[in-house]
Image (cartoon, rainbow, N blue to C red; front, side, top):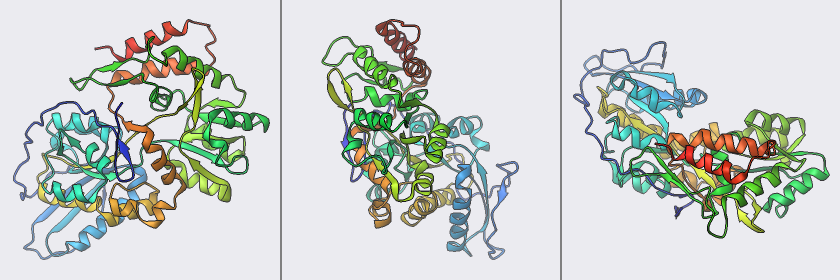
Length: 428
């Protein structure tokens, strides 16, 4: 896959060629009397003069972001005090599941919402998002990769929020130096010598992409925006699908390797049985708290495949802030979305949640650049691409890789397994 480097982050854009449906938003200044959320937590309302309009907005964000968003919203209300009577509510909504929740009933959905960038094309096609009105300003303020992730056919539809949804290697400096963590072979050797484990979640197709991404074997989204193409079972070229499968089996055969989900990785780090693992910035605080001065992070290592060293790849991703095209307070909702994603609040997000900024100035700040996790993510960005994959990708890859992690106990032919996986990935 081709790559394009940003200022600090790299991204591949293979968004589907979708034409944005015109939104059906109502009068942008109309008052909203409808309750958009049941059981929402009310933010403190800012007092304003009686003649000001009533502005009622619902915000969706990750449950873990509630304290952060509460502070951001309170500051927003203070900034615009006297211009409106605000009633802004928050409801927890997974960023990964935002699209499905929103498209279930757009008119009853949140006015402002956080979502993962791979949902953008579907939201645009459904008419849930309209082009950002001050797009030129947003483009100049944010990293190029984040702008690409927030755009369809070069039209900006959302506000970049973070540039850190990727993965890299965490390690314990007590056992490894910077040279050791350059190759998977050396990492496994040291772990085995110390009777410790190295972890990676092979039940997740998201991580399994690491082995195929820099081999010339490709996967991606077709022009219909729904189905996939995939050559991971390729039998031509310098690296064949069976070469990758064999490399994975060799890794799985090491007594030091453990395929486990996030909980297993963290539990192992905390009890000392795990000394390195592939994960993302969401575990940076836990790693620092547990390992202290021994906390290390680096780009993914190379691994042995077809008698050569192949740099492990990764999917990169961004979190975005969207404005519901059906919002009855579209102007104020847009203003709030821009506020949530501005430089100051992206910096605050890093300080409170450890999430990497998409804003250029925030990303270049000393505190961000001093973060081992963010530095590792920047290094890995050269070997990453945007996740633009149809839904049929996940289960077939997980099934294949789970069997590899188990050591292919049935001894089934590797080419047959690769063919079955690709058939599932490319299914209509």
